[in-house]
Amino acid sequence: MTTTKYFEDFEVGEVFRSPAKTLTDAHFLFFSGMTGDNHSIHYDDEYAKATRFGKRVTHGLLVTSMGALGASELSPLVEESMVVFLEQSSRFLKPVLIGDTIRPELEVSELIPKTKVGVLRLKTRITNQRDEVVLEGTHAYLIKKRPQT
Image (cartoon, rainbow, N blue to C red; front, side):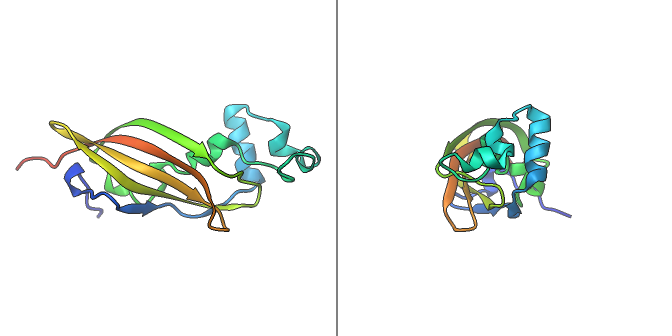
C-alpha cells in the first residue's frame, strides 16, 4: 500500500526520478504514429548524417514527455491528492540522438499554498548517458492539502 503525499508533505529540494530509457526506433515510430511528426531528421539515417547532428534526432516533444510525472516514482504517491496538471515548459539544451539513454528527474522548486489545495512547482531535468543536461523546464500541479480529521 502506497502512502499518499499531500501538499504539506512536500519540501523544496526533494527529487523524484524516473527510470532511464534508451531511445530506439520503437520510441520514434510510436511517437510519429501518435503525432504524425515524420520529419526525415527522425527516420532517415542518410538525411541525418548530412545534418549538424550526424545522427537521427529524437522528437523534442518525445523528450519532453519522458519527464512526465506519471512515469516517475512520485506518481503513485499523488494518485489520491493530485487535482490537475496546470502547466509545463521546456528548454532544449542539447540534442537527444537515437540510442541515447536519458534519465528524467523532478525537483520540488516551489510550494504555493492556497485554501484547500496548493501549487506544487517542479523543476524538470533530463540528462543523457554522458551526464549532460539535455532538457530543463518546469511543471506545475494543483495538489490537495491533507484532509482535516
